[in-house]
Each structure stands twice: as structure tokens, then as C-alpha cells.
Length: 286
Image (cartoon, rainbow, N blue to C red; front, side, top):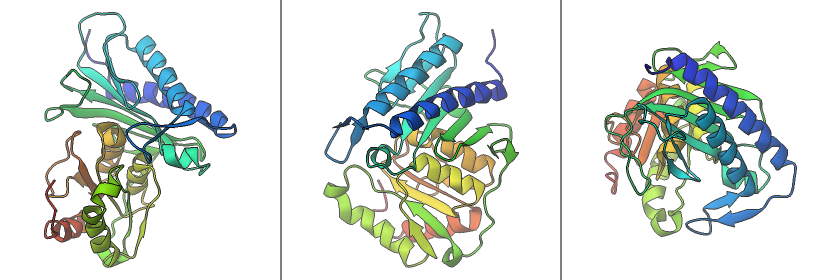
């Protein structure tokens, strides 16, 4: 049996993301159980785990030969023990956990189907040859679902979207974020922040990388950059940005791969200017 069409994968992911988003919205109304993972600013909630379990269950039922990689569960082999298919699902069940934990209604579900993603143990991502086939980001608090395929347009609630054609960095509204190791590496991250701050119209720190990338795709933002990201943060969003006409790369301007730790997405002119600025900063290389 051949690989399912990208549109079929996107439709399936959209249905699963919507269901997971409904679950998150219900959890958001209730008292939250909050824990930590790698450190005091790296939070996890009961809602992360509940959404993760739901998404894994639905994907394994719909695509029993596919591998699944999620932020909360790591790498999971096919449910039926059969030969592994070419598709791996890369999932963030709750992007924006800190927002969610503090009652800020800005978070999302991110699901991407990736071709040729090499398996590894312990769970990690090796992705030089990987291609994102389909990506979905669902914002349950706004009931907005962003979808894209490798050979189709980016869409928001079924309508085509495009990145803004901003030409001047001084007119650009750009989003960023700070990694979980910011207490140890604040000086490095603040160099990039300051360089953008004094050149852009304004910066935003919204707390959900997947939505930042989706908002670049639909023109609400003119760019996004962040260090320390993971494949589940960027797989769906980078595809959305590219299919909407933006450029997605690392901070050196190299084509974006899923294990890139520094991500920049913006329309061409803004992207080129930020690359020029970032490459001359101390600590610019990872």
C-alpha cells in the first residue's frame, strides 16, 4: 500500500487536533495540575498528558503502521508491530503550556506528518532528509485551524492565507521567545532580542511558537525567531509559513531542518534583513 495523500493526512490531523483542542478547552476551565520537567520554567500539566494520550490513540487507530513522536511521550513504534511506514507524526499536544498553566488563553495543538524521519533510540530526531508532508495547528480558544500540505496552499479555517509582503524591517511586527535555559544563557538570547528590538517596529513574546509561525503565515506577524526549539515546536508551523510565501531557515539563512535549534521565519525582505543582522552578532552560531 502506498503512502496516503498529503491532503488525506492533513484532514485526519485536523480532525484529531480539533478533538484534542476541545479537550484542552475543557481542561482550561478547571483547576490545573502543574508539574515541572527539566527545570522550574519547563512546565507540564495534566492537560498536556491528556491531549497527548488522545492524539496518540487516534493516530495509532487511523495509521497503525506509522511511528509517532510527541513532546510528552517521545518516540512510539507502530501499533501493530508491522513494517514501519515512511510517515512519522510529530506532535506537540499543548504548545504554550506556561500560558495554559497561568490561565492565559493562547496555546495550540500542533500535528505534522513527516516523510523519511530516521528513527533513533533513545527518542530523538534526526532529520536531514525529512520532509514535512502535512501540518496542522489548532487554536482552540479562537477556534482557528491552520492547515498546509507540501504541495498545496496554507489555509486558515479553509480559506487560503498569505504572509504579508512587508519590505522594511522598520515596519515589521516580529515575535520571539526565550528557551527554557534562559537563566543560564540570557546574555546570548538578549543579543538577538536587542538587535531586533532596535530595528523592528515592535516585538511580541506570545509564548507559543507554533502559533507564532501560523501567524506569520496569515500575516498577523511579519516574522518570528527563537532559539532552543524542538521539532514538535516547528514542524507544522514552518510548513505553514513556507506554503504561505514566507522563508523559514536557521539564523545563518540555511534551509530549515527539523532539528535546527534556531529558527527564523519571515517574508523574504524581512528575513534577509534579520539574517544580515543576526550573522554579525557575537554568539550568532549555535
